[in-house]
Picture 1: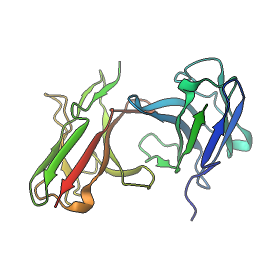
Picture 2 (picture 1 turned 180 degrees about the vertical axis):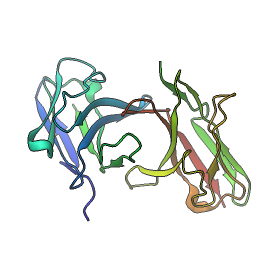
Picture 3 (picture 1 turned 60 degrees about the vertical axis):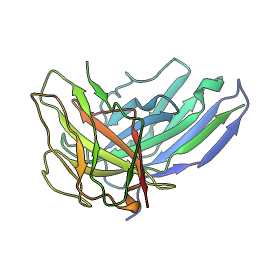
Picture 4 (picture 1 turned 30 degrees about the horizontal axis):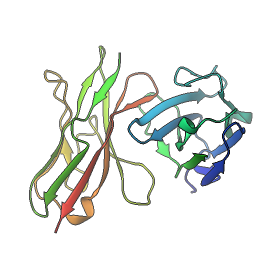
Length: 114
Length: 107
């Protein structure tokens, strides 16, 4: 079956604009994760959704970042008033949601803020 | 606090030589440790996890709780092993990653 799908693959925006990044998890996966991969920072956890539970937002770097997951499937990560330091690759992962499940990653969205 | 340290950002070895990528962690409970790999222009993928205790592509990693380490080893490196390697820890559901080590295998 299809893996985790992310769109767009690349996004160039101007400082101050809002952007939306989309993630389609693997069918049947109830857990969905967002990570950020930036130069010098490695991979950072942003937010985690599990079924209908309240999301774990502990990794969001500021209130400009938000995410939602509609219908327990597709998720959208929104960054408002983008800054140059937001430039990074944003990765989405999904899993079946059990405590020892493997997370499968999408190809990522490369965001460039000019 | 959960923390993963990969002390080497870059590692270069010759084909056929042994490889060891270091990973140390900090976690108060019983951690679950992983190695993820990202080949050029490919997505991040799981290489191995400590609970499986298996060898993947010739790589092994042993969890040493006394030294809080999970080093990745391969006795004879191959050119196709060139990639970015990330050590990761799972305490709760989320993964905490190290900074990554870029491994280059020279012919």
